[in-house]
Image (cartoon, rainbow, N blue to C red; front, side, top):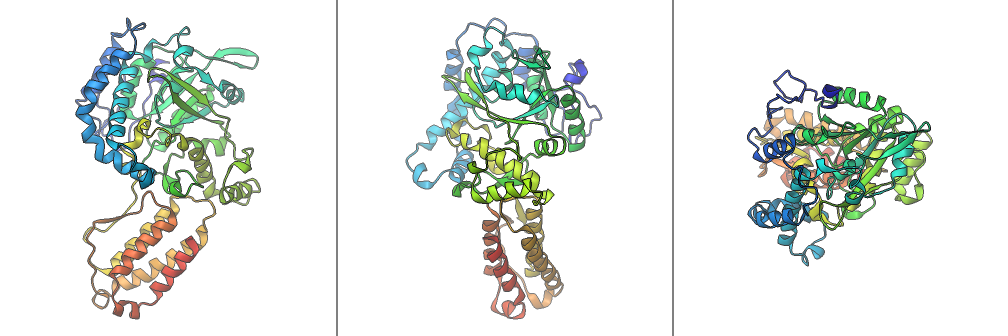
Length: 478
Protein backbone atom coordinates (compact mmCIF):
# COMPACT_ATOMS: atom_id res chain seq x y z
CA UNK A 1 0.00 0.00 0.00
CA UNK A 2 2.83 2.37 0.89
CA UNK A 3 4.48 1.78 -2.49
CA UNK A 4 1.20 2.38 -4.33
CA UNK A 5 0.41 5.59 -2.46
CA UNK A 6 3.68 7.18 -3.45
CA UNK A 7 4.03 5.82 -6.97
CA UNK A 8 5.93 7.81 -9.53
CA UNK A 9 6.20 6.54 -13.07
CA UNK A 10 9.32 7.42 -15.02
CA UNK A 11 9.30 11.00 -16.27
CA UNK A 12 9.70 12.06 -19.88
CA UNK A 13 13.37 12.38 -20.75
CA UNK A 14 14.50 10.69 -17.51
CA UNK A 15 17.57 8.47 -17.83
CA UNK A 16 17.06 6.66 -14.54
CA UNK A 17 15.09 3.39 -14.74
CA UNK A 18 13.72 3.73 -11.22
CA UNK A 19 9.97 4.40 -11.16
CA UNK A 20 9.47 5.18 -7.48
CA UNK A 21 10.49 7.83 -5.00
CA UNK A 22 11.11 6.12 -1.68
CA UNK A 23 12.63 7.21 1.62
CA UNK A 24 16.07 6.33 0.29
CA UNK A 25 15.63 7.93 -3.14
CA UNK A 26 17.86 10.76 -4.21
CA UNK A 27 16.10 14.10 -4.27
CA UNK A 28 16.70 14.53 -8.00
CA UNK A 29 14.07 12.36 -9.77
CA UNK A 30 14.52 13.97 -13.21
CA UNK A 31 17.29 15.69 -15.15
CA UNK A 32 15.59 19.06 -14.76
CA UNK A 33 15.05 18.83 -11.01
CA UNK A 34 17.03 21.43 -8.96
CA UNK A 35 19.55 19.15 -7.26
CA UNK A 36 20.52 21.62 -4.56
CA UNK A 37 17.20 23.32 -3.96
CA UNK A 38 17.53 24.28 -0.30
CA UNK A 39 13.88 25.36 -0.16
CA UNK A 40 12.58 21.90 -1.05
CA UNK A 41 15.19 20.14 1.05
CA UNK A 42 14.37 22.18 4.15
CA UNK A 43 10.64 21.52 3.91
CA UNK A 44 11.22 17.81 3.30
CA UNK A 45 13.56 17.61 6.33
CA UNK A 46 11.11 19.41 8.64
CA UNK A 47 8.23 17.19 7.60
CA UNK A 48 10.17 13.96 7.68
CA UNK A 49 11.31 14.48 11.29
CA UNK A 50 8.12 16.32 12.35
CA UNK A 51 10.04 19.35 13.60
CA UNK A 52 6.82 21.35 13.29
CA UNK A 53 4.75 19.19 15.64
CA UNK A 54 4.66 21.79 18.44
CA UNK A 55 3.40 24.66 16.26
CA UNK A 56 -0.30 23.86 16.51
CA UNK A 57 -1.15 26.90 18.65
CA UNK A 58 1.44 29.32 17.29
CA UNK A 59 -0.21 32.12 15.27
CA UNK A 60 0.62 32.65 11.62
CA UNK A 61 1.59 36.25 12.28
CA UNK A 62 5.21 35.30 12.93
CA UNK A 63 5.49 33.69 9.50
CA UNK A 64 3.89 36.73 7.91
CA UNK A 65 6.67 38.82 9.46
CA UNK A 66 9.24 36.48 7.89
CA UNK A 67 7.67 36.95 4.45
CA UNK A 68 7.64 40.72 4.99
CA UNK A 69 11.38 40.68 5.72
CA UNK A 70 12.26 38.41 2.79
CA UNK A 71 9.99 39.47 -0.06
CA UNK A 72 11.83 42.69 -0.98
CA UNK A 73 14.89 40.65 -1.93
CA UNK A 74 12.98 38.74 -4.61
CA UNK A 75 10.27 41.17 -5.68
CA UNK A 76 12.36 43.21 -8.13
CA UNK A 77 13.71 40.07 -9.78
CA UNK A 78 10.16 38.88 -10.48
CA UNK A 79 8.70 42.28 -11.39
CA UNK A 80 9.26 42.36 -15.18
CA UNK A 81 7.91 38.86 -15.75
CA UNK A 82 4.84 39.47 -13.58
CA UNK A 83 4.02 42.74 -15.34
CA UNK A 84 4.11 41.00 -18.75
CA UNK A 85 1.33 38.70 -17.58
CA UNK A 86 -0.72 41.48 -16.01
CA UNK A 87 -0.51 43.52 -19.21
CA UNK A 88 -1.94 40.54 -21.04
CA UNK A 89 -4.84 40.12 -18.59
CA UNK A 90 -5.79 43.71 -17.80
CA UNK A 91 -6.49 46.82 -19.92
CA UNK A 92 -3.90 49.64 -19.85
CA UNK A 93 -6.46 52.06 -18.37
CA UNK A 94 -6.80 49.88 -15.27
CA UNK A 95 -3.09 49.17 -14.90
CA UNK A 96 -2.30 52.88 -15.10
CA UNK A 97 -4.14 53.30 -11.81
CA UNK A 98 -2.40 50.37 -10.10
CA UNK A 99 0.89 50.33 -8.21
CA UNK A 100 2.33 47.28 -9.99
CA UNK A 101 5.34 47.24 -7.69
CA UNK A 102 2.95 46.67 -4.81
CA UNK A 103 1.26 43.85 -6.75
CA UNK A 104 4.68 42.32 -7.31
CA UNK A 105 5.48 42.60 -3.61
CA UNK A 106 2.19 40.93 -2.72
CA UNK A 107 2.82 38.10 -5.19
CA UNK A 108 6.22 37.29 -3.69
CA UNK A 109 4.92 37.60 -0.11
CA UNK A 110 2.04 35.27 -0.93
CA UNK A 111 4.37 32.60 -2.33
CA UNK A 112 6.65 32.78 0.72
CA UNK A 113 3.64 32.48 3.03
CA UNK A 114 2.25 29.60 0.99
CA UNK A 115 5.54 27.76 1.36
CA UNK A 116 5.65 28.42 5.12
CA UNK A 117 2.03 27.33 5.59
CA UNK A 118 2.67 24.12 3.66
CA UNK A 119 5.93 23.36 5.45
CA UNK A 120 4.88 24.09 9.04
CA UNK A 121 1.09 23.77 9.27
CA UNK A 122 -0.40 21.46 6.62
CA UNK A 123 0.56 18.21 8.34
CA UNK A 124 -0.98 19.44 11.62
CA UNK A 125 -4.58 19.27 10.42
CA UNK A 126 -6.82 17.24 12.74
CA UNK A 127 -10.56 16.47 12.85
CA UNK A 128 -10.82 19.23 15.46
CA UNK A 129 -9.19 22.08 13.51
CA UNK A 130 -9.72 21.32 9.83
CA UNK A 131 -13.15 22.95 9.67
CA UNK A 132 -11.76 26.02 11.42
CA UNK A 133 -8.88 26.55 9.01
CA UNK A 134 -10.53 25.28 5.81
CA UNK A 135 -14.35 25.47 6.02
CA UNK A 136 -16.11 23.91 3.06
CA UNK A 137 -18.95 25.12 0.87
CA UNK A 138 -20.61 22.60 -1.44
CA UNK A 139 -19.42 19.29 0.04
CA UNK A 140 -22.65 17.76 -1.29
CA UNK A 141 -21.23 18.05 -4.82
CA UNK A 142 -18.34 15.79 -3.83
CA UNK A 143 -20.66 13.28 -2.16
CA UNK A 144 -22.96 13.17 -5.18
CA UNK A 145 -20.01 12.57 -7.53
CA UNK A 146 -18.45 9.79 -5.40
CA UNK A 147 -21.80 8.04 -4.92
CA UNK A 148 -21.56 6.98 -8.58
CA UNK A 149 -18.69 4.69 -7.59
CA UNK A 150 -16.45 5.66 -10.51
CA UNK A 151 -14.16 7.98 -8.62
CA UNK A 152 -14.16 11.65 -9.55
CA UNK A 153 -11.96 14.57 -10.55
CA UNK A 154 -11.96 17.88 -8.81
CA UNK A 155 -10.44 20.56 -10.99
CA UNK A 156 -8.74 23.61 -9.52
CA UNK A 157 -6.32 26.43 -10.34
CA UNK A 158 -3.17 27.53 -8.53
CA UNK A 159 -4.96 30.41 -6.83
CA UNK A 160 -4.46 31.45 -3.18
CA UNK A 161 -3.82 28.42 -0.92
CA UNK A 162 -4.90 25.93 -3.61
CA UNK A 163 -3.54 22.96 -1.60
CA UNK A 164 -6.28 23.62 0.96
CA UNK A 165 -8.61 22.06 -1.60
CA UNK A 166 -7.44 18.62 -0.52
CA UNK A 167 -6.44 19.43 3.06
CA UNK A 168 -10.03 20.57 3.67
CA UNK A 169 -11.23 17.05 2.83
CA UNK A 170 -8.67 14.99 4.70
CA UNK A 171 -10.97 14.36 7.70
CA UNK A 172 -14.30 14.56 5.86
CA UNK A 173 -16.72 11.65 5.37
CA UNK A 174 -19.27 10.91 2.66
CA UNK A 175 -22.09 8.39 2.65
CA UNK A 176 -21.82 5.81 -0.14
CA UNK A 177 -24.20 2.86 -0.44
CA UNK A 178 -25.61 3.74 2.96
CA UNK A 179 -22.21 3.63 4.68
CA UNK A 180 -20.17 6.57 5.92
CA UNK A 181 -16.55 6.50 4.79
CA UNK A 182 -13.59 8.84 4.77
CA UNK A 183 -12.92 10.52 1.43
CA UNK A 184 -9.90 9.09 -0.40
CA UNK A 185 -7.96 11.84 -2.16
CA UNK A 186 -5.18 11.88 -4.73
CA UNK A 187 -3.32 14.85 -6.20
CA UNK A 188 -1.51 14.94 -9.54
CA UNK A 189 1.62 17.02 -9.06
CA UNK A 190 4.96 17.76 -10.71
CA UNK A 191 7.98 15.61 -9.84
CA UNK A 192 9.37 18.44 -7.73
CA UNK A 193 6.13 18.84 -5.76
CA UNK A 194 5.90 15.08 -5.32
CA UNK A 195 9.10 15.35 -3.28
CA UNK A 196 7.84 18.51 -1.56
CA UNK A 197 4.49 17.04 -0.44
CA UNK A 198 5.09 13.36 0.11
CA UNK A 199 6.17 13.61 3.78
CA UNK A 200 3.06 15.70 4.52
CA UNK A 201 0.85 13.13 2.80
CA UNK A 202 2.37 10.29 4.83
CA UNK A 203 0.54 11.70 7.86
CA UNK A 204 -2.82 10.93 6.27
CA UNK A 205 -3.55 7.37 5.04
CA UNK A 206 -6.29 8.63 2.70
CA UNK A 207 -4.02 11.10 0.83
CA UNK A 208 -1.96 10.00 -2.18
CA UNK A 209 0.25 11.55 -4.85
CA UNK A 210 0.87 10.86 -8.53
CA UNK A 211 3.72 12.60 -10.32
CA UNK A 212 3.06 13.97 -13.79
CA UNK A 213 4.35 11.83 -16.61
CA UNK A 214 3.72 10.54 -20.11
CA UNK A 215 0.03 10.04 -20.88
CA UNK A 216 0.32 6.24 -21.05
CA UNK A 217 1.92 5.82 -17.63
CA UNK A 218 -0.12 8.55 -15.95
CA UNK A 219 -3.35 7.11 -17.37
CA UNK A 220 -2.60 3.70 -15.82
CA UNK A 221 -1.95 5.23 -12.39
CA UNK A 222 -5.13 7.31 -12.50
CA UNK A 223 -7.21 4.29 -13.51
CA UNK A 224 -6.01 2.42 -10.40
CA UNK A 225 -7.14 5.23 -8.12
CA UNK A 226 -10.47 5.77 -9.87
CA UNK A 227 -11.21 2.04 -9.50
CA UNK A 228 -10.93 2.59 -5.72
CA UNK A 229 -13.34 5.55 -5.89
CA UNK A 230 -10.66 8.18 -5.22
CA UNK A 231 -11.20 11.89 -5.67
CA UNK A 232 -8.35 13.10 -7.90
CA UNK A 233 -7.12 16.70 -8.04
CA UNK A 234 -5.61 18.14 -11.20
CA UNK A 235 -4.78 21.78 -11.93
CA UNK A 236 -6.64 23.23 -14.89
CA UNK A 237 -3.84 25.79 -15.21
CA UNK A 238 -1.09 23.16 -15.21
CA UNK A 239 0.20 24.54 -18.53
CA UNK A 240 2.59 22.98 -21.01
CA UNK A 241 3.29 24.46 -24.48
CA UNK A 242 2.47 21.13 -26.17
CA UNK A 243 -1.05 20.90 -24.71
CA UNK A 244 -4.31 21.43 -26.57
CA UNK A 245 -5.31 25.13 -26.64
CA UNK A 246 -8.67 26.60 -25.73
CA UNK A 247 -9.96 30.09 -24.82
CA UNK A 248 -8.84 31.50 -21.47
CA UNK A 249 -12.34 32.88 -20.80
CA UNK A 250 -14.53 32.65 -23.88
CA UNK A 251 -17.08 35.40 -24.38
CA UNK A 252 -14.95 38.10 -22.77
CA UNK A 253 -13.33 40.07 -25.57
CA UNK A 254 -10.03 40.63 -23.83
CA UNK A 255 -9.77 37.02 -22.64
CA UNK A 256 -10.78 35.05 -25.73
CA UNK A 257 -7.11 34.24 -26.42
CA UNK A 258 -6.02 30.61 -26.54
CA UNK A 259 -3.90 28.96 -23.84
CA UNK A 260 -2.80 25.36 -23.19
CA UNK A 261 -5.13 23.19 -21.13
CA UNK A 262 -4.63 19.66 -19.74
CA UNK A 263 -6.84 17.08 -21.44
CA UNK A 264 -6.58 14.27 -18.87
CA UNK A 265 -9.87 15.22 -17.22
CA UNK A 266 -11.62 15.51 -20.57
CA UNK A 267 -10.36 12.08 -21.64
CA UNK A 268 -11.70 10.27 -18.58
CA UNK A 269 -14.96 12.23 -18.49
CA UNK A 270 -15.79 11.73 -22.17
CA UNK A 271 -14.61 8.11 -22.41
CA UNK A 272 -15.67 6.76 -19.01
CA UNK A 273 -18.15 9.30 -17.63
CA UNK A 274 -15.96 10.21 -14.63
CA UNK A 275 -17.62 13.14 -12.78
CA UNK A 276 -15.88 16.54 -12.67
CA UNK A 277 -16.34 18.93 -9.73
CA UNK A 278 -14.63 22.35 -10.02
CA UNK A 279 -13.19 23.81 -6.81
CA UNK A 280 -11.70 27.14 -5.77
CA UNK A 281 -9.83 28.17 -2.62
CA UNK A 282 -11.05 31.56 -1.43
CA UNK A 283 -8.49 33.41 0.75
CA UNK A 284 -9.27 34.16 4.38
CA UNK A 285 -7.63 36.59 6.79
CA UNK A 286 -4.25 34.99 5.97
CA UNK A 287 -2.95 32.10 3.88
CA UNK A 288 -3.23 29.71 6.79
CA UNK A 289 -7.01 29.98 6.45
CA UNK A 290 -9.31 29.82 3.45
CA UNK A 291 -12.80 28.77 2.47
CA UNK A 292 -12.87 25.91 -0.02
CA UNK A 293 -15.80 26.13 -2.41
CA UNK A 294 -16.84 23.10 -4.47
CA UNK A 295 -18.97 24.07 -7.45
CA UNK A 296 -21.73 22.03 -9.09
CA UNK A 297 -20.58 19.09 -11.19
CA UNK A 298 -19.87 19.91 -14.83
CA UNK A 299 -21.54 17.85 -17.53
CA UNK A 300 -21.78 18.70 -21.23
CA UNK A 301 -25.17 17.00 -21.31
CA UNK A 302 -26.81 18.81 -18.39
CA UNK A 303 -25.09 22.21 -17.96
CA UNK A 304 -27.32 25.27 -18.27
CA UNK A 305 -27.07 26.55 -21.86
CA UNK A 306 -28.22 30.04 -20.90
CA UNK A 307 -25.01 30.63 -18.92
CA UNK A 308 -22.84 30.59 -22.03
CA UNK A 309 -22.22 32.94 -25.00
CA UNK A 310 -24.06 32.11 -28.28
CA UNK A 311 -21.21 30.33 -30.14
CA UNK A 312 -20.35 28.20 -27.11
CA UNK A 313 -24.03 27.44 -26.61
CA UNK A 314 -24.35 26.38 -30.27
CA UNK A 315 -21.46 23.92 -29.93
CA UNK A 316 -23.03 22.48 -26.76
CA UNK A 317 -26.29 21.92 -28.65
CA UNK A 318 -24.38 20.27 -31.51
CA UNK A 319 -22.64 18.03 -28.98
CA UNK A 320 -25.92 16.93 -27.45
CA UNK A 321 -27.37 16.25 -30.89
CA UNK A 322 -24.31 14.22 -31.92
CA UNK A 323 -23.36 16.78 -34.59
CA UNK A 324 -20.11 18.14 -33.10
CA UNK A 325 -16.95 16.47 -34.49
CA UNK A 326 -15.28 14.24 -31.92
CA UNK A 327 -12.05 16.21 -32.12
CA UNK A 328 -13.88 19.23 -30.66
CA UNK A 329 -15.38 17.43 -27.65
CA UNK A 330 -12.21 17.80 -25.56
CA UNK A 331 -11.82 21.49 -26.35
CA UNK A 332 -15.47 22.15 -25.54
CA UNK A 333 -15.16 20.67 -22.05
CA UNK A 334 -11.85 22.45 -21.35
CA UNK A 335 -13.35 25.76 -22.49
CA UNK A 336 -16.20 25.37 -20.02
CA UNK A 337 -13.79 24.46 -17.20
CA UNK A 338 -11.70 27.55 -18.00
CA UNK A 339 -14.81 29.71 -18.05
CA UNK A 340 -15.80 28.34 -14.65
CA UNK A 341 -12.45 28.76 -12.89
CA UNK A 342 -10.37 31.45 -14.62
CA UNK A 343 -12.53 34.48 -13.73
CA UNK A 344 -11.36 33.98 -10.13
CA UNK A 345 -7.79 34.72 -11.24
CA UNK A 346 -8.77 38.24 -12.23
CA UNK A 347 -10.17 39.11 -8.80
CA UNK A 348 -6.79 39.07 -7.02
CA UNK A 349 -4.05 38.70 -9.64
CA UNK A 350 -1.21 38.61 -7.12
CA UNK A 351 -2.67 35.40 -5.66
CA UNK A 352 -2.31 33.39 -8.88
CA UNK A 353 0.88 31.35 -8.66
CA UNK A 354 1.11 30.72 -12.42
CA UNK A 355 1.48 34.44 -13.11
CA UNK A 356 5.28 34.23 -13.13
CA UNK A 357 5.48 31.32 -15.64
CA UNK A 358 2.41 32.24 -17.72
CA UNK A 359 4.32 33.63 -20.72
CA UNK A 360 6.84 30.81 -20.83
CA UNK A 361 4.27 28.02 -20.60
CA UNK A 362 1.71 29.48 -23.01
CA UNK A 363 4.03 30.26 -25.92
CA UNK A 364 3.43 28.93 -29.44
CA UNK A 365 6.04 29.99 -31.97
CA UNK A 366 6.81 29.85 -35.66
CA UNK A 367 10.58 29.42 -35.46
CA UNK A 368 12.44 31.31 -38.20
CA UNK A 369 16.06 30.57 -37.33
CA UNK A 370 18.27 30.98 -40.45
CA UNK A 371 15.23 31.61 -42.69
CA UNK A 372 16.31 33.93 -45.54
CA UNK A 373 14.15 32.60 -48.36
CA UNK A 374 10.60 33.87 -48.82
CA UNK A 375 9.40 30.44 -49.93
CA UNK A 376 10.71 28.91 -46.69
CA UNK A 377 8.98 31.63 -44.65
CA UNK A 378 5.69 30.87 -46.40
CA UNK A 379 6.00 27.10 -45.99
CA UNK A 380 7.08 27.16 -42.33
CA UNK A 381 4.29 29.59 -41.46
CA UNK A 382 1.64 27.45 -43.17
CA UNK A 383 2.86 24.25 -41.52
CA UNK A 384 2.93 25.82 -38.08
CA UNK A 385 -0.52 27.39 -38.50
CA UNK A 386 -1.86 23.96 -39.49
CA UNK A 387 -0.40 22.59 -36.25
CA UNK A 388 -1.98 25.52 -34.40
CA UNK A 389 -5.37 24.51 -35.83
CA UNK A 390 -4.82 20.85 -35.04
CA UNK A 391 -3.91 21.64 -31.43
CA UNK A 392 -6.65 24.16 -30.61
CA UNK A 393 -10.38 24.71 -30.28
CA UNK A 394 -12.55 27.82 -30.50
CA UNK A 395 -16.35 27.76 -30.37
CA UNK A 396 -17.93 28.39 -33.75
CA UNK A 397 -14.65 28.33 -35.70
CA UNK A 398 -14.87 27.03 -39.30
CA UNK A 399 -12.13 24.46 -38.84
CA UNK A 400 -12.67 22.43 -42.01
CA UNK A 401 -12.63 25.46 -44.31
CA UNK A 402 -9.66 27.09 -42.55
CA UNK A 403 -7.62 23.86 -42.73
CA UNK A 404 -8.48 23.54 -46.43
CA UNK A 405 -7.18 27.08 -47.08
CA UNK A 406 -4.01 26.49 -45.04
CA UNK A 407 -3.32 23.31 -47.01
CA UNK A 408 -3.62 25.31 -50.24
CA UNK A 409 -1.20 27.84 -48.77
CA UNK A 410 1.25 25.08 -47.80
CA UNK A 411 1.09 23.44 -51.24
CA UNK A 412 1.75 26.74 -53.05
CA UNK A 413 4.56 27.62 -50.62
CA UNK A 414 6.29 24.28 -51.18
CA UNK A 415 6.34 24.89 -54.94
CA UNK A 416 7.50 28.46 -54.37
CA UNK A 417 10.37 27.34 -52.15
CA UNK A 418 11.81 25.18 -54.91
CA UNK A 419 12.18 28.25 -57.13
CA UNK A 420 14.75 29.87 -54.88
CA UNK A 421 16.54 31.89 -57.54
CA UNK A 422 13.33 33.36 -58.89
CA UNK A 423 11.61 34.12 -55.60
CA UNK A 424 14.38 35.98 -53.80
CA UNK A 425 15.18 36.50 -50.13
CA UNK A 426 13.50 37.95 -47.07
CA UNK A 427 14.92 39.73 -44.04
CA UNK A 428 13.27 38.67 -40.78
CA UNK A 429 14.74 40.45 -37.77
CA UNK A 430 13.19 38.18 -35.13
CA UNK A 431 14.01 34.49 -34.71
CA UNK A 432 10.38 33.55 -34.27
CA UNK A 433 6.79 34.76 -34.63
CA UNK A 434 4.91 34.39 -31.33
CA UNK A 435 1.25 33.40 -31.77
CA UNK A 436 0.59 32.14 -28.24
CA UNK A 437 -2.05 33.99 -26.20
CA UNK A 438 -3.91 35.01 -29.37
CA UNK A 439 -7.19 33.98 -30.95
CA UNK A 440 -6.95 32.12 -34.27
CA UNK A 441 -8.01 35.26 -36.15
CA UNK A 442 -5.38 37.38 -34.40
CA UNK A 443 -2.70 34.76 -35.06
CA UNK A 444 -3.51 34.61 -38.79
CA UNK A 445 -3.61 38.40 -39.06
CA UNK A 446 -0.21 38.73 -37.33
CA UNK A 447 1.52 36.14 -39.51
CA UNK A 448 0.00 37.42 -42.76
CA UNK A 449 0.96 41.00 -41.90
CA UNK A 450 4.60 39.95 -41.37
CA UNK A 451 4.69 37.92 -44.59
CA UNK A 452 3.17 40.72 -46.64
CA UNK A 453 5.76 43.12 -45.28
CA UNK A 454 8.40 40.89 -46.87
CA UNK A 455 6.76 40.52 -50.28
CA UNK A 456 8.06 42.62 -53.16
CA UNK A 457 5.90 43.84 -56.05
CA UNK A 458 7.54 41.37 -58.49
CA UNK A 459 6.78 38.53 -56.06
CA UNK A 460 3.11 39.49 -55.81
CA UNK A 461 2.91 39.77 -59.57
CA UNK A 462 4.42 36.30 -60.07
CA UNK A 463 2.50 34.62 -57.22
CA UNK A 464 -0.94 36.28 -57.01
CA UNK A 465 -2.38 33.10 -55.46
CA UNK A 466 -0.92 33.99 -52.05
CA UNK A 467 -2.88 37.23 -51.70
CA UNK A 468 -6.03 35.30 -52.64
CA UNK A 469 -5.26 32.64 -50.01
CA UNK A 470 -4.54 35.28 -47.35
CA UNK A 471 -7.74 37.21 -48.05
CA UNK A 472 -9.78 34.01 -48.06
CA UNK A 473 -8.26 32.90 -44.76
CA UNK A 474 -8.93 36.23 -43.05
CA UNK A 475 -12.50 36.14 -44.34
CA UNK A 476 -13.23 32.72 -42.82
CA UNK A 477 -11.51 33.23 -39.48
CA UNK A 478 -13.42 36.33 -38.42
